[in-house]
Image (cartoon, rainbow, N blue to C red):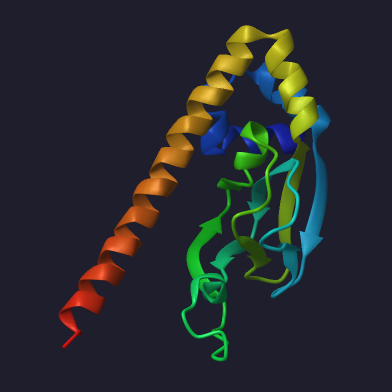
Length: 166
């Protein structure tokens, strides 16, 4: 559990958590390792867990075929982000428990993830308002950064599409 707490301490989403709060989180974790190219979860699947990268890398991919004008042309998945140690993903599961908006795939052998069930996290938030506020504040900051990065990707794509159009 001490190593889990140490890993969680490095995660942006748990910034400024006390050692006691990190220990509470560590008790909720379970760990899973993935080989290079293994799918952690597919786009469109149900969501109820938050993932923190303990070691390795994870690629976040989207399926461009979902918005393609030409269904006869199959396009490969598009990597929109590569996440590393200390970063988290699957945060939206904490908010809406909706379907996954992207695929998560291990980018390295021996990628090790700490997995936190959203229901247990929500119970901690309900039991300790300070814990809940800090988690939701950090979650909002993390998602805002990811949205800004995605916005830059979209703008670059639109710029190059416009620049290269007749």
